[in-house]
Image (cartoon, rainbow, N blue to C red):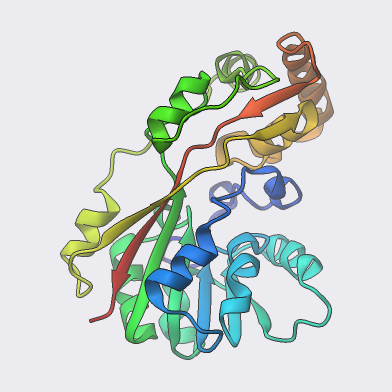
Length: 285
């Protein structure tokens, strides 16, 4: 999605990952109701979801708008979004394009623009400036992500992350991410990369025309249960472990990782804690 012409083949990690993307953990169940309350959405207006993938955020928020546009640079992601769109819903549009192209795509103006963990793939500052111009006065830019401060761990980490008491110990073991990382190292020579050392989004927004933003924290889903296949699919949806990296040995990798995972569970399932959902809100004042 970066500027400078069509993305190079090696910079398109989601080209083959579309079919696995829905294995990613969902955002907070309170996402839409909380945003309706905070921003006064009333079922009118237009929403643009940038880097929409298979349409997870766009479809979740759709009933709060008259029209929703999903934008993504990978046609296969858009195919997944179209397949997930209810046949009766004629207010959804799926557009092939990059975030940097928004000023030239003639998509119109919007009451809200969302990024679900996708802004970091773009030329962030240029894209944010383009988004400002695409919003109506009072419109909102929303950056949605799982809280990175609390990852998978013991049940006590849920209480620490959410401030809520934990009523019972999960019935299934947590996903063994360290063991998965070892499998990735064996196959690819490296595991999950560290988070990029870049300017925080809130700081970036503060020096644009948006100015200061606010963070809305929503309770995560504390009772997610995953099968072995769902855990594998989630990893295959990530850029660092996308199917392209394994070529014609994808089935072998899948079998190897599946064998490792089954050694870490007596129930055939895993408990997943993706964290709370944070929404960074910047208003066009």
